[in-house]
Length: 462
Image (cartoon, rainbow, N blue to C red; front, side):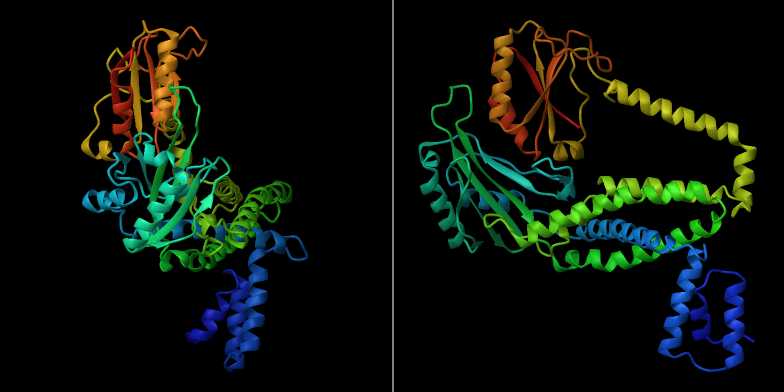
């Protein structure tokens, strides 16, 4: 006779085996319907039975750690998945309209097709949902009066229907504010430095566009966290039961889980601080858990994945083996598998040391990009004449700095910045690799460095 559905669901609290069967027999003999108190009692004892190790008082707190880390990981994935369905940022005429509102009559660079997630602009090791930057080419007499120009931009955006927020002064004599409209967030900033050398930038003005966090993204993390906690608990219980007799190795593994937990707690502390004491000149962090759940490559998440993989491997190696067919397959073809792993590792090592440039011209020109790569490229390469002087290279680096790019010198030079030959490029090839936050900044780079002494060519790179 098949037990009632309620009895079968209650028995799932226990791991497969004798205790589950005993519980089903006991419930069948009673013939009574489970009440809330009885169901809670079965759930508690069943959960404890899934952890194994009777009499061990540490297994429960370690299980809670695994649940917290599992909740964190799935919350990260759920948040990133929810962001995939957010509409793209405006481009074309709509983007030009916003630029003319903020900086009327001034050439504005920026925009482009940005990835769904990009690195944080302040380089704090994390990801944020894609944003685009727009900057003016150079200061004008009007923009050098930063207070008056900021007030004008503030009023123009308000007249265009934006919900603008108060202007705040920055530490270096500039001004900034933010505004919101139709699910878009605009962050404006301007600054000016007087008395700088002619080859340095005397300041700048820019704004960034990003998407306001929709409600469904807000609640993706709380919806995914319980699923991750359950998965973490079940995996931990399975590993704990299978390795019950291998206490030493498992104890070390469990202690290692404290490190990613510390990372998660540090993330939480910073997120709560940003929510509790917000920056008045920046969009508020709502809800406070939002900054936690963008970056699946964050240190605690990666460490959690590695530890979990190690735990599962350790549990799978404890006899009796859970998947005899898989083990037999690995044993039979272990040489082939080891050879394939060696090929993969060797290929990855070669790519890492060669820079992955593949086919390239001897003068350092990168391979041509596809149309899709051009739309999303946030990197460029400035090829430098090997006969250029050190002063010419310094002026070129200053010009790149005026565009807001992050230049990295490559090649041999008499100033000691020697690096190994990369790919098929000869040792006397010189160039700057430049990175930007937005694909549209490439046009500003071309406009700034073209015609300078020592510059041979400028190219987009992937």
